[in-house]
Length: 207
Image 1 (cartoon, rainbow, N blue to C red):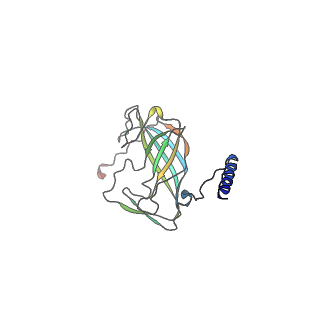
Image 2 (cartoon, rainbow, N blue to C red):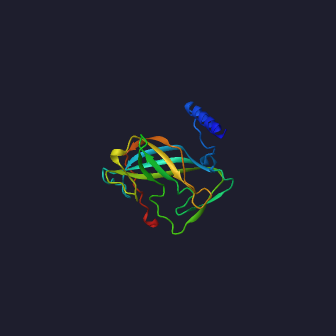
Image 3 (cartoon, one colour):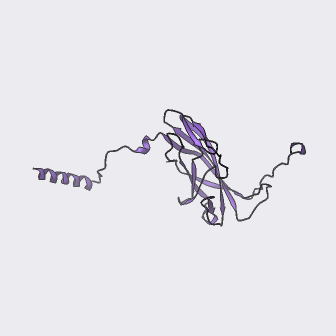
């Protein structure tokens, strides 16, 4: 009798598999239950010539890729969260991944790349519900070999359309686990011929 039941089970499983069904464990996706998400709702990108503080163009084969994204953060934990940062906001752990139009990764950067960190961390509040924030970044583009400390995109790899996505978490809070946003495609605006604005000198009375 036991052998008959076992053979019957094998036969039923074979029928299911032949019909295109898969027998999978019954479990709920952890991603669906995690109480935080990030979403890019608007994005733009532009390529600029690199200029020094006086507004003079530097080497002709170096450029700067600038991005500006409007990001929507959802805190569904039903309470305000305190986030630890060494730069100045609750969103400093969010990093931007830049890909070419085919999805190949070009660089990973953050809006804190060129900022000096604080000696001691500070706590910033991430309110429950929806928070919308603008995040910008600047990544060098040139012929040099990429550096992990200062990411650079090889000029020959940069395509006219790029893909952007954010990932990261909120350190020190209940939402510290890394999450990832949607991916958006953006056409790069060519602003390499624009002359950068020179700084206006202050009167001697203000020096």
